[in-house]
Length: 163
Image (cartoon, rainbow, N blue to C red; front, side):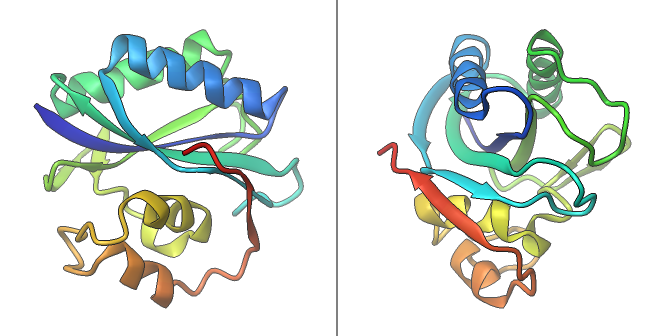
């Protein structure tokens, strides 16, 4: 059984409903959801002139290999209406693999751990809520340490405690 940490997020439509729909699809097609963070709201990162995002981190147990998991997650994004018209642009849903076991994968269609997660407070805050002691296999630092060292100054607000 594989353990994967996923980040779900979006800023179009009913953001709460979209996170719940993604949660249900992930449960149906990817595996058992073991833990989930609260939902957090943050301003857009990178391309800033767009609606605020809702984000949530999920820990899943999955029998899927990493490549099959990302294929399945991309299919879920498509089912939910994800359009990739503008890089870092508005979206109904985005699902990223943050960690897959302790694997380090660096291939054209899949990079794990997520290569920019340590720079993004909106990723680290929900991840630290459910896995503060998980050690990043590249940086050899815990998620809590990465959050403490994160230079990102965007405000991230917990809006819903789901646990």
